[in-house]
Length: 89
Image (cartoon, rainbow, N blue to C red; front, side, top):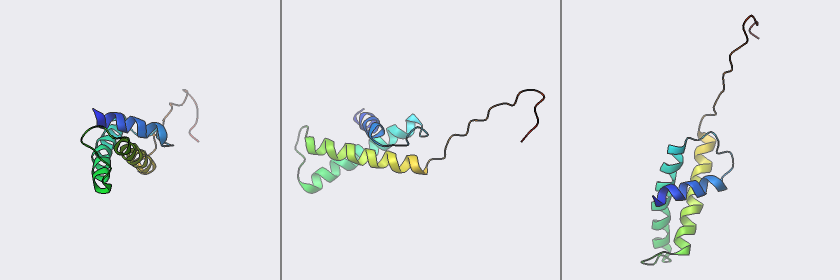
C-alpha cells in the first residue's frame, strides 16, 4: 500500500505522466519504496520507525522513476472515426 502511495506522489511531481497507466505508476512506486528504504539504510539515516529522510528518498526515486517511464512509455494515439462520406487525407 505504501508503494502505491509513493507512486502516486511521484506521479504528481513528475511532468508528462498522462500516458502512463495506473498499474505502471503503482509498480514504479513499489520499486521506489524498496529502493528508497535501501538508500536510507545505505546512508545510515533510516530508523526502526518512520523517517522523514527515508520517505524523502522514496518519493524522490518515485518521481524520477515515473519521469523515466513516462518518457519511454509510448504515447496514446487517439483514432477518431471519420465522418461518413469524407475522403482520407
